[in-house]
Amino acid sequence: MKISILQVAYKNLLRKRTRSVLTVLGIAMAAWVLVSLFGFNKGYETSLNRDIDNLGFQMLVIAKGCPYEAATLMLKGGTGLKYLKEEIVDRIAREPEVDGVTPMLMQVAFDPNKGESGGLAVYQGVDPKTFPRMKSFLKFKNGGWFSDPGAAEAVFGYEAAELEQREVGDMYLIPEKDVEVKVVGVLERTGTQDDGSIFLPIGAVQKIFGIKDELTGIGIKVKKDADIAKFEAKMFELPDVQVVSLTQVKNTIMTLVATARVMVLSIALIAILIAMMGVVNTILMSVMERRQEIGILKSMGAMASDIFKLVWIETLILCAAGGLVGSLMALVTARITDVLVRKLLPYAPSGGLVRIEPGLVLTTLGLVTLIGLLSGVYPAWKAGRVRPLESIRSEEAS
Amino acid sequence: MSDREKMVIEAEDLVRVYKRGAEEIRAVDGVSLSIGEGEFVSVIGPSGSGKTTLINVLGCLDNPTSGRLLLDGRPVFENCRALSEASLTRVRREVFGYIFQKFYLIPTLSVLENVVLPFTFYKKPDASEDVSRVLDILGILNRKDHLPGELSGGEMQRVAIARALVNKPRILLADEPTGNLDTKRSAEIGGILDDLNRQEGLTVVLVTHNPVLAARAHRTIELRDGRVLS
Image (cartoon, rainbow over the protein chains, first blue to last red):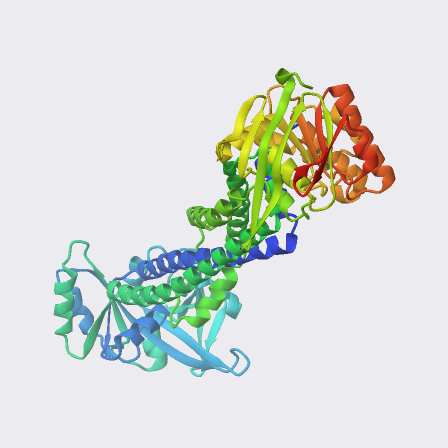
């Protein structure tokens, strides 16, 4: 029978269980922050890209106002605050860079039955001819798009249908206006803001809300080979409108997120340094406590390199366990992190904000293990230098 | 034991000086002795006489300050020069087995695991991985799966002896092995050392305060103030 150095190292750590567990937890916290942070970075970017791609258009023309407010509103499901003339649609559509345009009219009504004290119901007036073509990825759970451009009909997003408890064929009363529309379609879940939207034909919204020849926004799909910058400049020449390029919005949001990320990364690095100090402290203390025993191991034939290896393995076990526990914690708490981050951010895209992939977990484990190896060098070197005589010296010389 | 061929340890004018502040303590002060193969030698003397220091130097756990030390006729220390730490480790694992007053068992390893621990670092080609015989001789075979905390002091010292024996040492150095044991357990450990010497032909060097235990040896070396009296 033989006992491996790994077993000896593991059993050594079991001696002071509380201390070992606390050290593992310290490393786990650092690993948790790291995995969550990088997972958030990846998830946020992916979700933001998907949200923007799922809009179906790359540019939005709206009435003059704050572009970031407009972009935020748009990403949250709205299409702008002020109105622009419907005639602009044709002017834009004639531009050679344009692949397609879709006019939109967003309206709100106060619904006293929404929530505890009532709330705003948002209606998206969309063009039945162009909107479905631009959002070709939208699939119906039941029913389909409107039967005619002015029909008093509605298409519900997946969540909106659940919230209002409506199915195809049901009638839906628009509060304040006392107008009933028929539900003709319920969309499948998309994971985007469309899930919570109620779509009506733009003509019906104009009629119900008494708006004539006006829109809140125009979505533009630009041709793939078009010069977007040149086209943007051309759009700015139109009176009283502004153009929001979603690539620009995306970059601005990502820059803001990157700034926040640098800050959080600094905190994570501090956490790692503290954890590293904890590991060095734990192992060094354990080496000091076991000086006599290390001396005995040397007297039974262990070389300095064997003792170095033993102590190094102990450090490695602590760090690898911490990395593993931290990664698991990050996986388990990804949903909670998602909710918390969503509360802190001014704008958060729909879908998962924290995306933890196997590659990320492996990278973190590798990093934490590397930290373990570095942290273990000094205590292991110190242990390797213990002379066998140490084992006897504390006993009174006789 | 005058036959030089059979000498395993030879010490000539060994000196070990410690410094405590400005004071110099000559713990071993010009000791010359020889120990033959298969001998059972006890080292006795009052506290502070240099017994432990001497056995540490003879066992290559500590270097002398001056003098000459030979193992099997080969110099380990002479002309104020010692072997390197790695070479000393090789000598220690090839030649010696050590038993101390404290048992130094690893509390989270079972008796069996503690006994085979030396194999983790080094195993002599002629040492058997089956340690049941050693455990049986020492009467702890039935305790092999127990943790040290579940054993009596006597049993723990037996485990420490078993651990010192698994790599088939040629010389067993025992420093106060019964210091923590009562009279009955001390007698048992004395009996075991005696048997190992008589039946296995093991060279035993025993440091003790216990006159009964010392009387089991073939020869007794008495130390006082770092010098050999007899």
